[in-house]
Each structure stands twice: as C-alpha cells, then as structure tokens.
Length: 145
Image 1 (cartoon, helix red, strand yellow):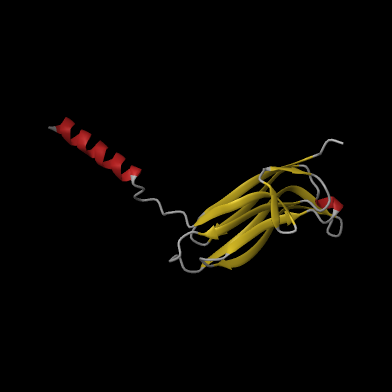
Image 2 (cartoon, one colour):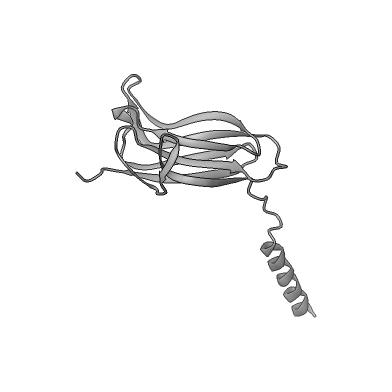
C-alpha cells in the first residue's frame, strides 16, 4: 500500500510540474535581436563587429495583454568601459522604465564613442519588479580587415 501511495504521489508531482504549476508564466518575450541599422534589423546574430556606429540589441514585448503595467530596469552589462571623463571602469548602465502590454520596446546599444568599443561579452537585460529577467548576450569581436 505504501509503495502505491509513493507511486501515486510521484505521478501527481510530475504532472503538476509538466503543466507549470508553481512557475509564474513569462510576461516578456524577445521579438527580434541582432544588428540594427537606422532602426531596422539587418542581421539576426549575437556576434557584433567592433565598428563605430554599430547598433546591437533586441526588441521585446509584454506578451500577456492583461499583464498591466510593469516597472522594469534596463541593464546594459559591459566587459568594462573606461569613460575618459570619469576615469573609472563602467560595468553597467541602468535605466528605469514602465512597460505596458501592446507596444514593442527596444534595448539597443550603439557604439558612438571610440572608448565604448570594447571587445568581449555584453549582456542586455530587462529586469521587472515581478522578478522576471529577459536577457540576450552579445559577443563584440574585432572584424577581419
């Protein structure tokens, strides 16, 4: 009898796990990512050439139309930029925003200064006040000549 109970409990827990009970559904989804030019996606990729004017990132939206307003932080995690004006290493740039269902939002970084063009891994994240994190990593590389 005890073996039957343990078997029943195992099946019950497995079925609850399969239907997603206990996990909050994801509110955010990436619509497109890669390299952008003049606001248009030109290449879906996570590899970004280190070139002045290169723009990379992603567009995302709030999936659930009933989600309501979400407070969020947009985080650009860099390999370590040294702003000559501040003379210190900048690991992250953070902005706060409010998200609503419907519109598509952008998380895009553009190399506009020579000191920003740092090789390595970059991560662009959206962190909501509900604890959800949407992230995309990019590898900035030196293009071959």
